[in-house]
Image (cartoon, rainbow, N blue to C red; front, side):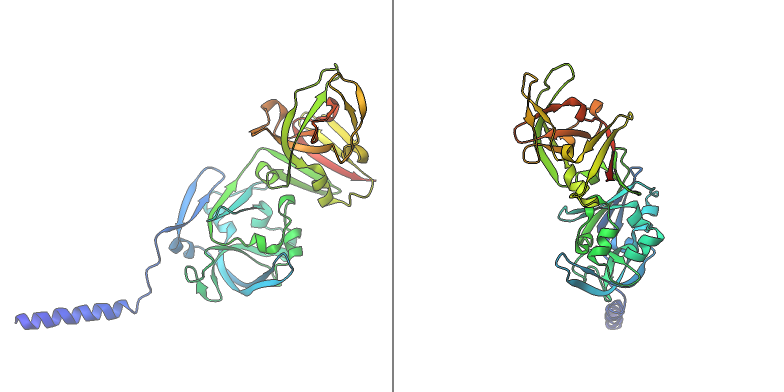
Length: 342
């Protein structure tokens, strides 16, 4: 009797082992993705959670910085818009910061997440891919990956530039972040708009910080003849931004507008630093130029954000020798930079 019981138990163990081999392996329950909403809500997603969300698939490939096509194949993943809706929704002007496990970040706009008809034709749907050519993460060894599924199946460098904000006009390959661990939807009140013709680009604080920066000092002479302290500013060289939008060899003007409506127009020579310079006694000592004076949009004074009374962004003349220029050209609380040609 005891022998029969042992046989039966052994038989049951064998059957359990055999049957367990026919079932799908358990998906890891470790957190693979953090998603942060504009309202402060945070959600954690395991790989199992992600695969249970609405997904799409499509064929795509992208160009690298050398123009070569890479990683052509079939991708499956969750549209980024699904994560936006899961975490409370977003609105025009909000941004998405994508972070990889090595802290590499890319910034995308609302229009990348919810593309217009025109952008949809160029970039297609933006997804967080977890499968490539039938191989799923973790066997697909790039982790969770940002991908675009355009109608023509090709995400070119031109497509990338055409569907980017000013700070991210880069090769398509840089947008396809690997090993993504965090999606952060952010709403920022600190913005500045760059306008040319009928195009306006509104950049948040985080986007502005992605642009190439300048670190130099400058001083100004007030209308009462007083010279300010020397400010060590970090900011955008406005020449770089204007060069993105127009041919800077042509004649143009740049109007810089403050939040209180004050505006200052810079003609081409002034824009390139050709402005009157003064000594510490307030006497004119000649004119500057691109070699020693730059017009920047500052956002840091030293290692700190600008003082509240200066707003988030300030137009200022700076240079390697801390040039002294007229205070009327230093515009505080800048909200708009308008470029006009001719």
